[in-house]
Length: 432
Image 1 (tube, rainbow, N blue to C red):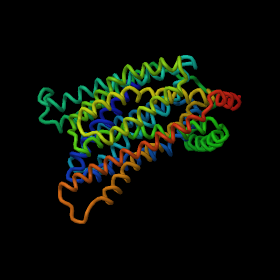
Image 2: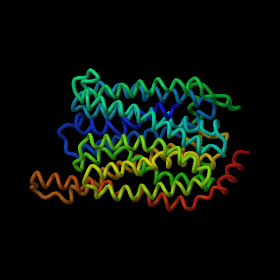
Image 3: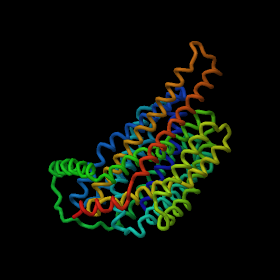
Image 4: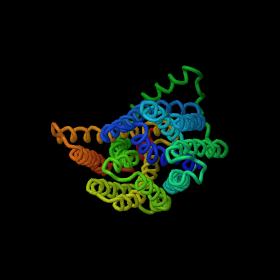
């Protein structure tokens, strides 16, 4: 149910309306490559902040059995920041980025503790399925609210709203309400096993977290399998997260209508629902690494095709392909990692897992932003015509998205050398 709750933010805000509204409303009058760079740097800032916080938060949570409390705190931080987007006026891109970054911190911070609770509700035989079920529920719940939000923008008068712009602002409020209300199920129903360690109070609580963070880092350096998997994950999940956050912005940069792109996102959500569940079931039959490789291969094809597409229907096809593997690669990566870490230190190790994921989302958006701006600068003549400027901007955007293929390739090569059985033996020795 928490996947059902927070996926509204991932879908309506991160992937859907925020990139569109940021480009057309909050960054009004700015060229497309500059607005893309601003959005990319905003995503990078959010990733950097949560990456710095993640391992310490995980260490603190494991030291005192307070994972649920941290989950709830960050979830409602995200709820509040999402609701605040309603207040930002046209042209105020700086405030829009600020509240968005804080919302992403709430979303990502809560996920550290949500992920770490997974091994406490599922054993090794069912963890792939349970992880896939969570992502599947997220696609369905996030997709249903997103569909409602899209209808609000297409026919605002049916919802008592004056125009599409107002509808988008109210959509942010509906996300906050959805996220906040359905998180109550997690608060009430989700059990948490108590650890033997007694939590410290006040400043000592944080100091203990930093100490354990340093200790965890030393342990991970010694756990060669976990370390190798985390580096591989860092690269390929960067490509996944970058496509999630930047796909709509990219489509607008090469001239597609925002409504076409929103429809493509809806396709991804509702295709993602059954396929995330399917990947979870397949993870009980095949080795999860094989399925992760299939997903990486499809993502590389999607990225390549995305650089040459010219019609909206091609974007729809790519949306179907992404929907088939997006939930699967996330769910199986999460459950595969759980097999490699000590069972009594899940929040601590998932802190590092999420840290690398957020550091990865620094690299991808920045790579797109810098590549696009660099290509634009190289190709732009001294006195360009408006048509030349438009053409060069679109070419630069295509080069920017193409750079993401490198991340998938490096991640796939490193994943090949991850030995699950060796990782289990290392985790068992450390857990004793």
